[in-house]
Length: 116
Image (cartoon, rainbow, N blue to C red; front, side):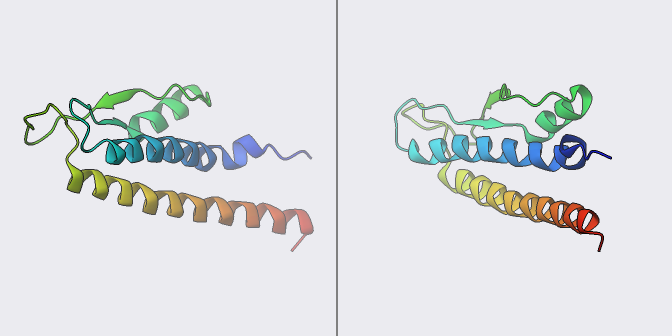
C-alpha cells in the first residue's frame, strides 16, 4: 500500500509554507519601518488555509493585503513597529507549533512503516 504524503501531511506542510511566506513579508515590514511612504503588507493566514482546503491547490499566489494603521504617520508609512514586531513573533511561534505537529505526523508514519 502506497502512502500519499500529500494526504498525510498536506495541511501542516501547506501551513508551514504560508508561515514562511508571511515571515518574509512581516520581516520586510520591519525592515521598512522608517521608509517614507512604505505600505505594510500581510497575508491572511486563515483565508490562505481555507482556500487550500477548498481547492486542494498548493500555490504561492497568496493574497497580500495592506495593513490599515491605527495611527497615520506624517511620511505615509503604515508600519506600526510594536504591532509589526508582535505579529512577527506570533507568526514565529505559530511556525514552531506547526513544525512540531508536522514532526509528530512524520514520526507516526515512520513508526507505522517500521511496524512499531
